[in-house]
Every structure is written in structure tokens, then in C-alpha cells.
Image: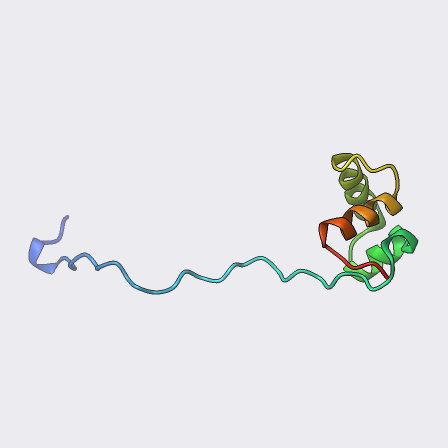
Length: 86
């Protein structure tokens, strides 16, 4: 059974409501210790991740940036303005 046309609701006009805020969680604060002296376990504890996850992410970042060590990653981060030298 279908409703008579007189009982149907009119189409709503587009609303001027703002878009919802992003649902992604806020970024964690950057580590305060130099990254080249922070172990995978320390990073994992600070960010509530497993050491294997940290190891994977560090390895992938090093591969993408062609870095041979964490120290080289720190140099690249300082040059890019992502962090300041101590």
C-alpha cells in the first residue's frame, strides 16, 4: 500500500549545519627525549603501542626516507622543521 500524495512529507531544504568534526583521535605529543636514544620499548610504552608496531613504523619511515639510522632520521626531521635540535 502506498500513502496518498497529501500525506507525504515535503523534501527538506539543504541544511546549513557545519560539517562534523573529524573523528580521528588527537595526535600524541612528540617525545621529549631525543629519538636516536629512545628505544622501541620506551616509544611503545609512551604511545600505548606494541614494540613490534613501533619497530615496523620506524623501519618503514627509514625505508621511505632512505635513512640508514635513527640518527639520520633525526637530522632529516630537524632540517624539515619537524623538531628542533637540542
